[in-house]
Image (cartoon, rainbow, N blue to C red; front, side, top):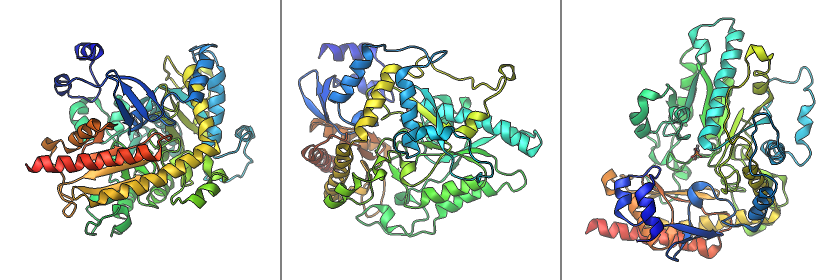
Length: 514
Ligand SMILES: *Cc1c(COP(=O)(O)O)cnc(C)c1O
């Protein structure tokens, strides 16, 4: 066995991994990468088909990314944000604010001007403050704590009372939601497995059905060989469920500080895409009832959800020239302005751990006061605003905004769509859901019945193992295979990813029958 693999098995405990299974087999030791390709200690090559767990954007060792980090390295790697500002974090905050609000260069600063008196209070909020942290979980913790404290301070006053309901604001999130692994983030999520394990440590949050068309009990459509969103037959019961959550407690009013969601597609819940129109309707309901909106764009951010809905070669040339091309967030793509925008994974192009929580001046102002009033936001991390991370993020954003990158993403999205169509011929593929540059492929016993594989068959895991043998690396979410290629992936590489998936599914179907 490779020496590094040996050391790993002796000393390392891996995340989300049954270590007994891990210790049975020699692990792949990644030693390098370039573009969409990873190299291992045995000299083998693999395609990084899930962008190193959804983090990588432009490929490994992108010359501009490397150069930016090296440039920063020669200045300083890290100094504390407790007490000091720094160069790349200041620049990055300005850039994130501008991009999040879809503004061209130089306009982010305009928001310093006081809003005119009489301006409508329900105008779309503008994100203009950035709180840096380290990963997706902490980005969500920050949003949670801010929303909680903001609501306690403002709603209690507004109601002129301090009843426990007014000062104990709750959170509403989607069924199956995953928002990270720290205690607040797990509380917010609704993955039964985690709630069973840590229930006693968590605080109560409410869940509402997510718009999972393929497995929706209200969808009366028979299965077809296309994305379930396209042939659903329902009356938007999922939207009604959200309305119910907010309106059942007429006397006490809206109990929720915030509605938390992943826009356009829920990732770790199983790559569950939202039918067109759902997001707008449910966020309107939440807002109408006075709840804040927390958008978790840890997975969807930075162009992952695509460039535009339908792409052909002529359209690509046009898109690249539109300001819309700068719409790097799923919320911005559908014209939604949340009160909190949480980003991590792709923020640094997947090169370094860093996260950010963007929020509005309204939230920020609720934490202003005299020192002794103790209105300070008491939260922070050692590496908040880390310079290397911020430098990487600045370089990544610069690449994302080039015409070449927009074209590349639009083209890749089209190729992904074409390639995925070949999978419909496989009877054990029930649903193929693509949103931009992400795809979830749901394995079932038979597409005609939608019957899922039993847990013990480990269908998703086995298909991914078979894909690894074919030189393609990804991880499943249950029985959903994830394809999330780095943006630099070539047509040939994408073809290999999808054909390895097809061959592996066919192999799995054959072996389970014999
Ligand atoms: C990965 C992820 C998180 C957690 O991010 P970490 O960096 O792993 O803590 C939160 N929300 C979403 C949507 C994610 O995909």
